[in-house]
Amino acid sequence: MTSHTKNISAETLLFAFLVTVASALLLAILWKFGLEEIVDPWLPGLHAFEPSGERWEFVVVTSLLVTLALLVPTSLGLRLAKRQQETWQLLLSIFDRIPQPMFVTNTDRTIEMINPALQQLSGYSSIDLKGQPLQKLLHGEDQTIQTQLHQIMTQQEQWSGELWLLRRDGARYAVWMSVHTLRDSHKNVMAYIGALTDITWRKKQEQSVWLQTHHDPLTELPNRRLFLSRMQQMLTGMLIDGTRLALLLVDLDQFGAVHFTHGQEVSDLLLKEVAKRLRHVTRSEDLVARLTGDKFVILLQGSRVLEAAEIVSIHLLEQMTQPALVAGQALTLGVSISIVLVPEHGNQIEQLLELADQTMRQVKQQGGNQYMIAPY
Image (cartoon, rainbow, N blue to C red; front, side, top):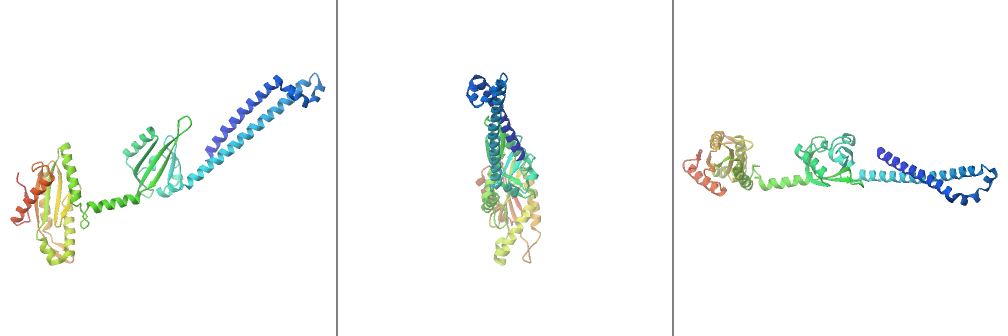
C-alpha cells in the first residue's frame, strides 16, 4: 500500500510543478503585453522611485503572480493526491473485506497480495505468499496445468476453470478459479486479479453419487454399469494400440447352499471376502467387478493375456481352497472360471458375455472348481 501511495503522490506533485511553471511563464508574458496597465493603478507608489520604479513594479507583481501560481496548483495537486490516497485505501479495505478468496499478481505472475478469505481457505498467510510465484498457490496441480494457465494468462483477457489445490497442511481442496487481466489506459497489462470459489463439498458430493451409481455397495467393486463402460473404452483403445483383452467370468460354487444354511448376513460377509481375494490375485490396473449375486468378472489387458488369464485363474483357485473365517465359521467355496479372449472370440461386449456364460455352463457340468477357455 505504501509504494502505491508514493507513486501517486509523486506523479501528482510533478503535475502541479509543471502547471506552476507554465502558469508563471504565462503571467510573465501577459505582464509584458498589457497586464502592467491593469495592475498599475493598484501600485501607484512604485513610480515615485523613477527611473527604477518600473523595474521594482515588475519584480513585485511577478513575485505576487508566481506565488499565486505556486499556491493554487500545488493546493489542488495535494488535494488530488489526498483524494487518490483515500480512494486507494478504500479499495484495499474493500479487497480485505470481500468474502470471496482473491489474489493479485504483477505482470510476471508474482503474488502482490491476497485477501483474508484466501488466507483462511489456503492456510497460507499474506507473508507466506507475497513476492512468491503464483505456482506456490497452485502447487496442488501438475506442471501441465500450470503451464497451460501461464499461456492462457499471457494470451487471453480472462480464464476460468476447475482446479484441485493443496492447502498449507497438505489437504486437497477443489476450487473454481477465474483470472482477469487488468490494463491501463494504454492497453498495457498492469496486473492479474484472481478469484476462487471453494467447491470441495460439491465435488465430494458428486464423487459420492458417482461411487454409488458405479460401484457395488456391498463389495465396493465396480458394478455392471461401470464394467460395461470400461470394457467399451478398452475395446476402443485396442484399435489404437493393438493390445488384447481377456475376460474371466467367475462364479461361486454352491453359494446358494451357503445362503440357505447360514443366512443373508453370512452370505454378504462371504461375498466381501471373495472380493478381497479377487483383488489379491489381480494387478491394480486390472478391472475386477461384481456383475450380479455371486457372479464376478475380471478384465485383463496386455500382449500376452491368455497366459495372464491362466495364471490368475490358477492363483484364484488356490486362494479359494483356503477356508474363509466368516462370523466365527470357517467356510470353503470353490469357483468356476470361464475365459474368453479379444479379438479371438469377437469384439462385441454382449457376444463375449454370452460366450462366457456358455463356457461357464460347461464348467459347471464338469463339476466346477476349475477354469476353461472358450473354444475358438
